[in-house]
Length: 259
Image 1 (cartoon, rainbow, N blue to C red):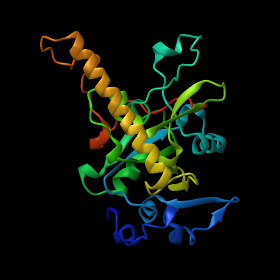
Image 2 (image 1 turned 90 degrees about the vertical axis):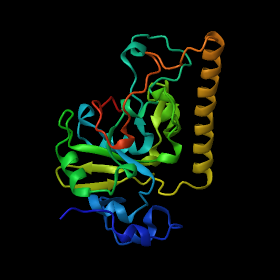
Image 3 (image 1 turned 135 degrees about the vertical axis):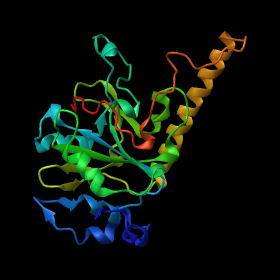
């Protein structure tokens, strides 16, 4: 029988971070590491008005240091090939903020109930490079910015910090990362930095990021209208509306260099 979100998630105390009461019953392995079955993530947080995405780690190997780095740093924004050619990038922030360039869409609450059996089948048969470790992320749809430019749509999900080479880089915020799914064991190692509730400083940060993306869109529209007073539409080759993963569509790309 297919597993779907049960009343456990609904009965959870919303004021308890990271499903605190439930986590007390989860044994620790190798120090502070905690593991749960895939369907048990429903006990940890709400999935109302959210989407779940995955990021395979095959190109970086399957060592646990890769997972730890992603838990600590977030998922590094994929950098388009054209911008990788230049060696002198100066103070430019690199890495795409288009979620479709960095993850595979697995499910959206806009598409119906969360079926863990179907998700498990996707995770166990990861279509890209046969990844056995897949980083699971939960994104609140409230911070998805509906606009024609993909990099602005999901900009609020990204934070900025320097990579190991000192290059300012966009990363998917580590607080959206639920954990790592291991296809060999069928379990999820929980990310201690995950934030189940969008409240306090985290909410203020997301509000600011969304407002910045909206302002960026507004200025771009105003600049376009100034250059095209004759009524040309803004939608063109560079600003066309591609398929996004809010509908749970699995994208064509999912892996990049984690370092």
